[in-house]
Image (cartoon, rainbow, N blue to C red; front, side, top):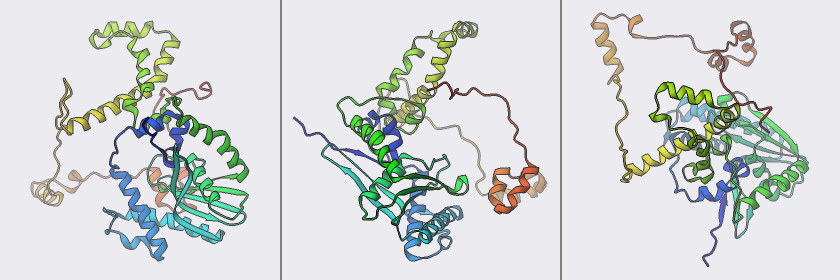
Length: 369
């Protein structure tokens, strides 16, 4: 009998495999994919912050320099500085602060769970786990990833703090935010949530639980049997691709409220599955695979200035004015808020209004239990 391969569970994807335990083994079957540009930039910002912390230097000095293969922009360096400022604040509060700490929480023949926490501060009374997020997607401070880091930190310290604080530094969403819980509450979460999910994930028949949030970043969407099941109710409908518009309207009118609800419930997951299959097919064809009825073709081309300055001079010489060739508009209230000092932001209350552009269809969260 072949030896069972050790399942590598990662804190960064814990929210997914806790919600859908089957995704852990399924994702392990997907070949490694190189990180995208945004992820590489995030890694470079983390590396810059760590270097500046160790050398006690200003990240803004690195504008235009290359870090981890990425040329650092002013925004990149400002993000690193905000992370450093959070680290310094933790240093002022606690005895011991470390950055980029690798913790192995569990290591068994069946699975391992380990990850690297951005910042860990600890004293006899308190443990702080801080994480820099450079993306735009909102990250809650009460996260599974942070709790796993906290459990790892507690396992590798002689200190006995009673409280844990999680901090998220996410410059795209303003000031850092935090969440607190007792060490006892963290232990209950480990017993009642984390360990049952792990046991389920490593079992011979792990539970599939597809959902919009769990499936969003899952690398195994295109091979997930539960995702394929989402097509059942859609496939049961008539083939609207060969129907005239009037007949399509008749089909829509014939659907009961329950049928409409069922289709809408599945729509986000079906759409994500289709997108994942398209992405997978594109990569396969780029590597030489042949998919019947499909081909790769260039995206629609759009004209761009070869040299904007040369174009500006030529357009002015042709008789166009600066007002004609340049577009300007007032920045958004959100952009203005970032530029204003904290005590100045109150002026926005009298200058802005929240105006809805209309109605949109949304899930009734009060009924989706």
